[in-house]
Image (cartoon, rainbow over all chains, first blue to last red; front, side, top):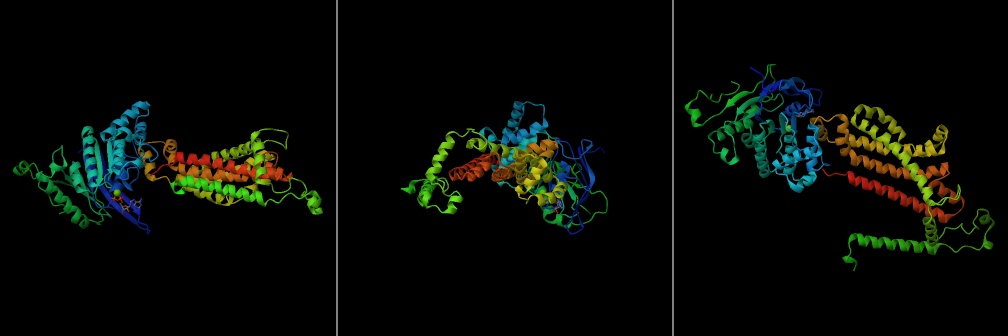
Length: 301
Length: 278
Ligand SMILES: Nc1ncnc2c1ncn2[C@@H]1O[C@H](COP(=O)(O)OP(=O)(O)O)[C@@H](O)[C@H]1O
Ligand SMILES: [Mg+2]
């Protein structure tokens, strides 16, 4: 089997637990992401999602294990991996426009000032930020607008992999909905590979091709990989009508509500931990031909 | 009637009232100059009999100010230069020592703020050197440098280095990790990170340190010039005291205050320019 575009192999992360011992966040975790895929990772707070993302971003070193992207091992941060942080991480002394040109200049040092600015404005316009608002400082923007700037900054750099750490966690439901739509629209145009952390089940179903489910820590596992068998383009009002929607949703709720706890805290046996693929398809076509779609298997039996 | 005025207007009126009342009290409590014949032996010996010996009334200070400020740059020999020239010398010394201090303190503060090891290595020296009164360095400086002008500048250097050094280190160490991570994910080198992320992020704290330093430097230069003599506003005050020209002493005290206020205002302006809201 050839390696996927992004391959996480036997990743282990330990921290000192503050009492002289070690805290193993996760152990021997392995999974892959294909090019152009939109993958969400769901799990309770503290299970290690941000830790994984910081390793993928190159901002942190794992205790052991390797991450390879496009055949090359990741060591340190790179412009090929764009990051959108939960708290936006805009530079508060720069205007909205300058926050985006900051990234573009780093990516394209050879461009002229006007090229850089035009490019930045284009991506700001894609998230609905146009006109005078681009000259405002982040402190003069609402939370939703700030996250839009952060998304524009990331997309404007055309990273091979886009990492988003709970990007909408701090936003109200309506704003979150609008920006999710914008994110889908931009992503649809680029075929970017996206890895996104969230704790919102509906958000994950709307956006993802595949959802990775993590059990609670310590010794958290990326336990399942749930395919979202709902065709694109999706929109929030129509997907709920799809026969697979509630089946998938119930599966996720069940996992996060019960099984994430039941499976927690088990020290591994040193073997590689790969998520079990789960495919739920209740459409008429799939029901008529059960061969093409394996029924949901119980995990860990 | 006062109710219709803004806070600033009311404050301005109150300030003027306080000034006028203060000056009137001052003017009225100055005793009339005693006639020379009534002086005691002691008063005659200490110079009390000279017309300039008493504390002058404000009207006299004002006319002195007018006289000095209308020709601030006259130069009639070593002991008789215009107030503008004297203040110019002081500002030149303060700025020279201050800029040298900034050139050392800001890069060093960056290093100390970025590196735990550097912080721990430099900290004991800073803790011991910082509480030393800058004037205590003067004899050593005079002996080693053998030049009064350079010694005064050295004293300014040594007194203005600490607030800038500590504030720079503090500001740099306190830069939000997220902002540094933004630089890292954009593959900025360490020099570009320092200039485009850490410096603007720490600038408000650094400029606060620079503002404290310039204030201290201006306090210290007066004392330093009283010691080394020759030129400068500190020497001028001391010289006029030796001449028992209290009118000039009071006038130059006011000028020291005004220049100090202007220096502080310049850094206040800079502080507002680099401030940002999170
Ligand atoms: N630098 C660190 N030092 C010690 N423990 C850490 C560190 N970073 C994260 N942890 C611990 O690792 C676990 C996972 O954290 P995190 O990845 O932030 O969780 P999540 O993003 O899923 O909420 C938590 O228990 C947290 O306390
Ligand atoms: Mg997190």
